[in-house]
Image (tube, rainbow over all chains, first blue to last red; front, side):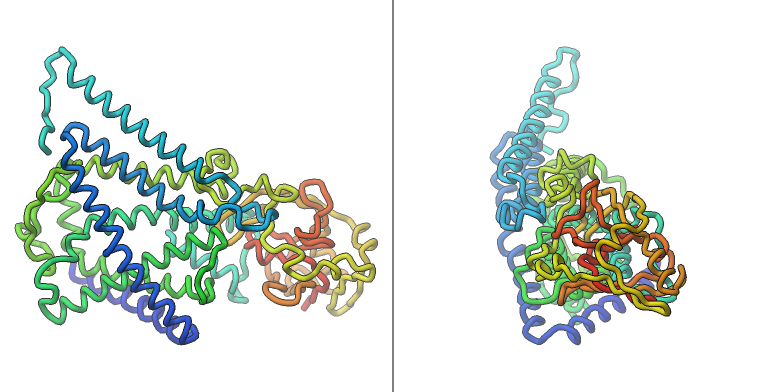
Length: 147
Length: 361
């Protein structure tokens, strides 16, 4: 175990140092400063905004009955991930010259479609779950209640 | 995978002269660069979920227990920061959007080293925890509690104590399913720019090859390359230098023997499309100039700056064409009229357009 850790650590450290060295020596001082700002801002934005919103949503979800909660969580998770990707596409839609054949689609409509499909699937799975619970064959109900 | 395919792409742009880029497989660059962008995009949802799952670690008290602890926290900062910036800027590159002052190609590569280095370092630090997690049968355990780290005899000393969670959540299996679905949907709806049959479901794909002129998108237009008058000039000539140099007029060029090949045009943003190119084999011109398949061939464009020249060495010399036709039509100005280079397993930007001169050495 110890050898692997040392080997990985050294390899990682060397690559990391090489990258930093190149960045520091090859970028203009002003560009490097902007990059540094980007790096710090990215962490601040994520840890200070994106993560708290996610955690807050999770806490708010405690109000949802346990049986349906996981389906709503799943739908929100998948929906949020898709939306993150779609936002820059929507923002830059149609901003490029035609011959590039880039960013031509109606991404807002496409996002709506994908989110709709996600919601529909989550709802369907939930309905199936409810139906299965009411089966007369004596399946033990609520086996994952409260987990 | 993202790192390796990234390095392969870099190699195409700056190969070592003693190890030339091969001409086959024809689709190689299309595959490696397609994979590079696909894995990079897939890493975005993966990173976000991973960061969410370790978010509580940010608030462990005390924040700095020792010098070693401080250094580890710093390494995590570097890892998170470089991952977020690298994936974001990489993704924006596929949108051709560059809201930053630095040069993308070089910075992306160097930040790539920083990122992969940080990842390896992180794995080295966490290896005992990883080993424990892989061995424990936690498939049905609650995501947040599983086994508290303070009961894990092999946990890394950094972990500290964890209070039990206040609410229930979907179980670990459910999380894997949800994340997997999210990544799957994202990849399937974006990869249509690389994998042509999936273009129809490419709801979030940036490029649509079928909407490009003559069936192929254009990155650098003739106007932005400032070649409009030069490329259509009456006195355009193709100069070929070498032991027996010569010059060709457009008529002479168009009457030479031409062949048809199916080569993809694959660009660094990850999109690619196959196309039928017809043109004069470069090797014919090379031989006429006194060279052969082992010569070094450098081609020059009418474009005054930017990627206005490229080098052919090794197997690509024999496989390359001076294309005059694309998908049955004479190539238009934006695609490189009067002639452009096209070769297999070669990044799009190195298939130089609006050629004016070929040097054979």
